[in-house]
Image 1 (tube, protein in one colour):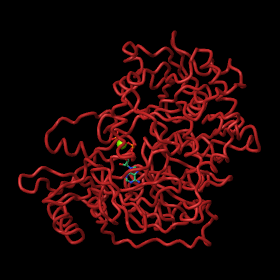
Image 2 (cartoon, protein in one colour; image 1 turned 90 degrees about the horizontal axis):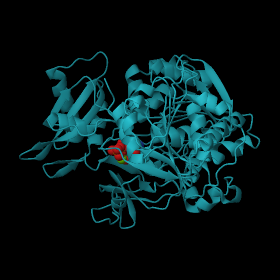
Image 3 (cartoon, rainbow, N blue to C red; image 1 turned 120 degrees about the vertical axis):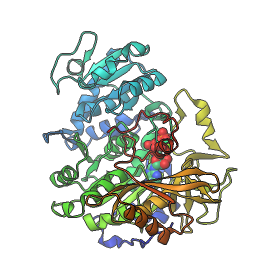
Length: 582
Ligand code: ATP
Ligand code: MG
């Protein structure tokens, strides 16, 4: 990795709070999944995400502690304690039971971030059914496609989103019940549909949690669709061990923390880290119904005195675009620790945190399939900007070659792989076992990402397997080129692809968007090419640069390089169900 940024060393004694993980090496050496499992409450061998996240706190000293501080899009607040969360989720679990929902039935959630979504998810888990989240901005087709693939029997939605369900309803043979959360928006629920409020108000606040075992299904998440058709990764209740452990040691959650995860529960970060990790650790979560806005976000941190903040590179790049002055105009002194996931975090983003918050941003890596964080930077560990960090203490990660053999030499590029057996690992792609099986080779889970590992065990992201560029016989990491481009003051974001070329096989082509105050010109384009040549060398620097208005991204904020490429080459765009709209 070519980087102009030096290692960020930490003085652990000076951190605002003594971290749960004081020494990565020591915890790794002594790590035992059994030990962490003993910190959970598994009555009679029951593993249940709903019990573990909600009931065990509601039944103990945390009963009256706020689990969730919800802020509506308009700014109104509602607070729910663990005891209230237990009562509300129990009502929903009873309602499902009355409807005849059985263990492992698929219950879809298609809603904005409102409290009922959270009650519903935990109620479903306690009822032993499978939670299947859908992102609220999906149109009818992606909703239909996913429900069909999973043979969902229930969908929970809102009046605003209901027309999208109605448009496809006739084609959904498996769908038995449509539950509408109508009371917040007002309006009547149509005949044949069920009213969330009526259903739950009539139900008891007591519920005997279904005795799910560690290998019973819990959540099914569709992947982001960055590289192609989204896959339905199915998880089991055992995953809670991973959520709890990474919540404790990566998120560094302490009992009185106020925590904010900005991800939407339509994506795995919004459930694993917007629900399961914070609640299983018994902390208070802030949930903001509103969307991204630099000012709004700083106000959320200031208003709720957020201490631990988990967000994404796309948001960080937008905050960077809005400048480092804005955060300085807010009181963000409560912040202790900032993390990012979802895409590679450019070194520029890591150090920008120092400028804006006096805190570096900690990158970590995982996927829908892994269910929980696998590789991370930790509060007590030095950061090498541009690196995803080191494997979680209970995780073995490696770089392997095409034959599935581990590559021992440092900084050699290969496929990022993880040793199977971690608690939150997905157990199948729903109705696609063949694809699932194809992800395992030689005793490794193949992640589909390319990376390298340095001599000290830090992992460096190179690119998606399909995105790595082969130009004139050498491999170029799109991430490295993108990071170099955004170091230039004019560039806000960059997406880099390999463009087929008769002599070089591929050439490096970059698409960039500009920061406010800069406009496209031939001179700027040439300047950017020069900037990259100086830093990366002529072989790696982009041969072509195109300045565009915006980059195609998934709704979870990831740059879709496959679309940049398809558009460049005039090829079909493939599945665009998760494409962010204009
Ligand atoms: P699909 O599998 O449908 O193409 P996706 O891979 O984007 O979509 P997710 O499971 O949401 O779906 O994302 C996981 C992927 O995101 C990782 O495999 C990796 O490519 C990327 N990613 C996540 N975190 C990081 C990170 N810290 N650094 C680099 N890449 C990351
Ligand atoms: Mg993927």
